[in-house]
Image: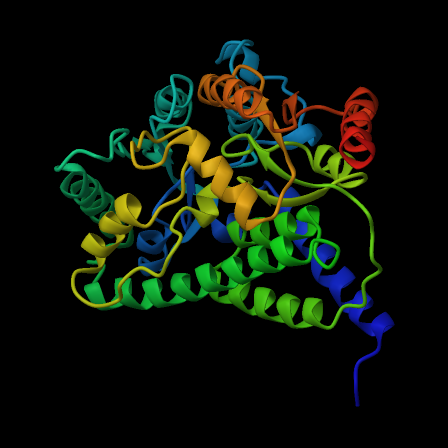
Length: 385
């Protein structure tokens, strides 16, 4: 018997409600103690943690539901919200169950997170995973490979035995399926944004940071099946791309504010979860395959210099493939990589006479009235020009 439109929406609502609850979950319970490895965005090779039988836990800050009370004594008030609220989560006890902490030197603030963590939570053995910023160097794959092998050894010591190549290949298979499902989700959003909103896609992907990928794969398969059968009503909204959510994530209310009047047909939200854009080869040395994929099969981001991925070309490709007519260029407050890209892209969009809107955000924002007026005016200018 065919499932009705009402049953489809009820099932989707249930899935999305679970994803939303998971996205808000910050506490690492005692039942998970020493089984969870935390990492600070943007990208982290989760497959190695998965192969160790541990669960990777992406630290995307506390959002606008965590009040910073203790972190200001450990970190400057001028530092971006995600660093401050992540530190707050550590200091208020939410992350006591972490069995490890890894940060990456993606910017001046992030590269000091391991030091802050080491001073306050030395029992979690904080580490820096030093990925190359210039990936065009001939030595870049070898450098990444050596760092991944170091990570492998650290985790092997935690679990008391070696992480085998077979275990890594099994994890590659799980994550390759996850990447295929995420690509299908974004293809659907680009093709038919009325069927799948950006908030919904965001929640579906972020849920994967809170449980093992096997369960996330099942959730995405179910969601895609329901979305394919979803009844939709045609809507007249301008199609835009959103850039600026690569590290600190904008509040969901900000995305909803934009989507009230625009279709966001592509974005860089949670780009670390979608960093590798193709399947990682499952034969040969699995660690080398991961390292090579980081260099050769990866998305563009302000936190990585790659001369093959010019900012302007990346944006134009996004707009062309998503059939977007305008762009929203955003950046988190105090985010130097984001603000650098914002300036460069704004100049180029001015030169090419492509409509765009510049927005600034921080994760702890709670008021969106002024932003709503800006976005509504921008959307009207696109519809009625």
